Image 1 (cartoon, each protein chain N blue to C red):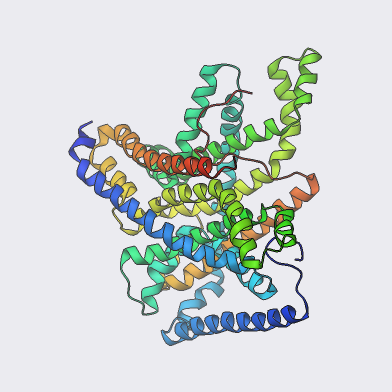
Image 2: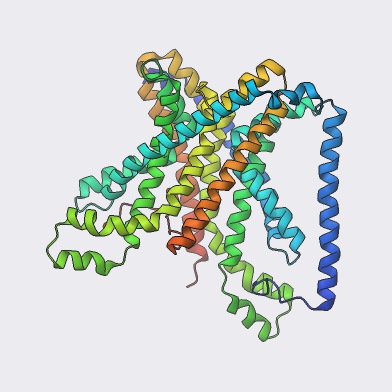
Length: 214
Length: 278
């Protein structure tokens, strides 16, 4: 256990960075993803096509390749940004495609009759949207959204390959320094990730329960 | 599109507005592309020195061999993952509580831990005996196997209950029911999800870059090491992956139509609070 206790502060620093990546990219992806989803659901065919192209391109490119492009590519075109920002751009863009699909599936999960009923009792468009469609759509979005955030938590580990000292980076260093305690280190750091993942799924379960129709 | 919950079928005025918005969106999209290309041109990224390598047969071959290694790793990983998934997916449905909980713990563990961390760990421990490519394959197999275990579980449970009841009624043992009745029918339901998981595995082979396992991204690294064209190489790698994955996605859609299977209801990772018996 020495390897874990002696390096507790380094490991915690690592997880702090992991959490920072998670929060920054979670918010970034949410903003971008909402934008793309609204284009994807728009009545204008060209908007739908542009959003579809965005999703196809960034979803089918491995996150690692996207990071290579922003991490090495941005400085090559004269855009100077820090490590964290360059990695985050790729991570937010990649994750936003999954957010957009989650949102879209949420809206599509609302039965057509709901909107028809709302209109037939005379609700205008905005009221239909805010009172009838969105509340139900958001509820249907909780489980896929939680999956996306959990996937993002795990994906933040890719930053380790690009010199950000987050949790997986610490693991890489520690398993080299403490050859006899590798399994302890592995399970210790795995536990850290499991805690983050469990917090997300616990939060999602709470939300789902609270928003469930009685 | 008249069947969206968000809006009615457009009338003549709305159609006109939509056309205008469409043209505006197209203009913005083109403007963004032009701006990107001009920026690349401006910074000397569009020179022959940066791109010629991708038309040089010797280097195209390096990339193709990388692609082949990547495909091999993905296929190997998915085959191992199928075995892993079958064992633990069926294990999750076992009538023995011990087997059920063990399977659940193993599956949840490998789903919660970052894949890259698994790969790095396997590589540090065993790379001297099995090499970096197999470290990658084993890491991928453990992760994708745990996802496939869920697919197997959901697929088997999606087979109508009457099937297993009928099998029991004619006197088949539980293992025979699973082997002769449930799995053959479940496979049909699972196939699209399995191919989708292959796409995920193919994308994740790019993680081999971190442990220097042979593959497409590693081939890219060799090329940019020599020609100092990281951006160009990154874009080429992205294009190869996009084409490969889009083709596979077409296979998934085709399979879904062909088999008439609805997408599986898979409980998202960690959303399941406890092991369930059938």
